Amino acid sequence: MTRTVVESKTKTAIIGFDEPFCVIGERINPTGRKILNAELEAGDYSRVEADAIAQTAAGATILDINSGAVFSNKMAEDPRYADNNFVEPTLMRALIERVQAVVDTPLCIDSSVPGALENGLAAAEGRPLLNSVTGEEERMEMVLPLVKKYNVPVVAISNDDTGISEDPDVRFAVAKKIVERAADFGIPAHDIVVDPLVMPVGAMGSAGLQVFTLVRRLREELGVNTTCGASNISFGLPNRHGINNAFLPMAMAAGMTSAIMNPVALPVNQTKIAEKKAAIAAAGIILPEGMDDKTFVTLFGMGSMSSKPGKEMEAIRAANFLMDCDPSGAAWINFNKIPGSDAGGRGGRKRRRG
Image (tube, rainbow, N blue to C red):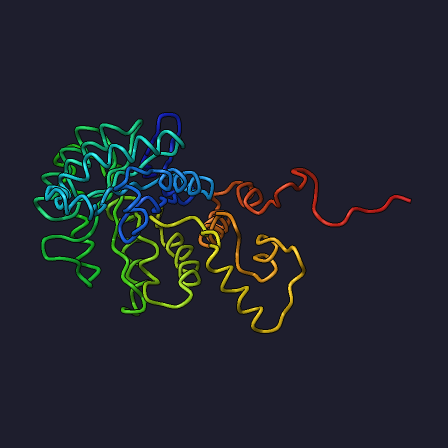
């Protein structure tokens, strides 16, 4: 069985055909997160640390760390900050050091910048996953020597110099090319995790079926583990969690062994609470005096005031159990345990003794 080993200083995550599905937490990524970008530019890593803790608590077994920040204010003062090759190497090292200080979860180093990848590999304790190599000749010549030098596994993305093909046969051929080129460097197939690229099903109706077919071929013909950006499948659609919750177990059944995703259901913020209270007041509903926000959020089905595992994690845990990757359902039972409940004994009402 193919097993890809990713390690921190004391913990091991295994991506494998006969292992529980591996969740790679994606939250530590400044792309599209204006507040996080601004905080990182100011040297504030508190949100990164909180994201690392929350994702680990929600069940992520690996944490992806992306250093693709844009420092707009510094850019205006110093043109060097317009170059990611200047910004990312230093930032990547700082991100990894901060995350390792608060959690001992294995890491995935994510950047398109060579200096950031190497700084990340130097700073990471254990055996991180490198994200990523593509089928582009220049990228393979740059990344694969690093993979060999540091003896780490790598994510291989199925696009090349021609871009991303909608033809699944072309994407398979690109993955095969990367696996073969890696072998030339002495990198075994079990250290390559292929991302066959998930297309949005809203734009391409066959996107799901394509991925399921590709994953089976990658597993059976190349013997490699697979991953994907899980939320890509639902991009642009309403109720994205519903699509994701169906997609992930189906991908697992097809042979996918990991996904880069957000494992956390984000807490309800004060703005949402205030809007809901205003709507209730406008409807003439009078709330009990002194009701706290936690009770209010629960009463009106708004979610939670604190971070907790998302619905996608529930679907993954259930699929692990159904696919015999959760012996005796222990992880499923623990996942569904009510906080503060008795760990032992059976559920149901207690019988009253006469």
